[in-house]
Image (cartoon, rainbow, N blue to C red; front, side):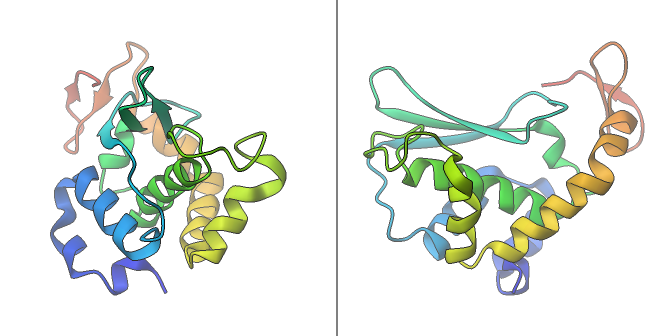
Length: 162
């Protein structure tokens, strides 16, 4: 079952506020994972080949999840945003980008992220997201990026990339 079918919180997600998504996903799917530091989330650059990242500050007080700024667009299915945040939370839970102990030598060792998302009942989101990315992402990216590095807003006007 897709998260949005059971989550009235997301009905007003026209602004796609990442903190609301992070908190809801953590509560519903990662409640067994302790927040051992301050976890921040924000939109970053409109990367062509990256949807998200997670980093740990040098003093280990802050974990930062960065999201591709293009995920704000309503043309992007919500399950792509949900799957991306959940993917980064798996890394956090496995000790990558967090002070938690590392459970694996490498963050994607042997498909651990995919298995973890399946275990946490986020497999449908992951598979739908993968299919959309495979079929639509590069065309979407090309429509919203210009050679000067700006993004086109919802009405096709140029706005500076964030």
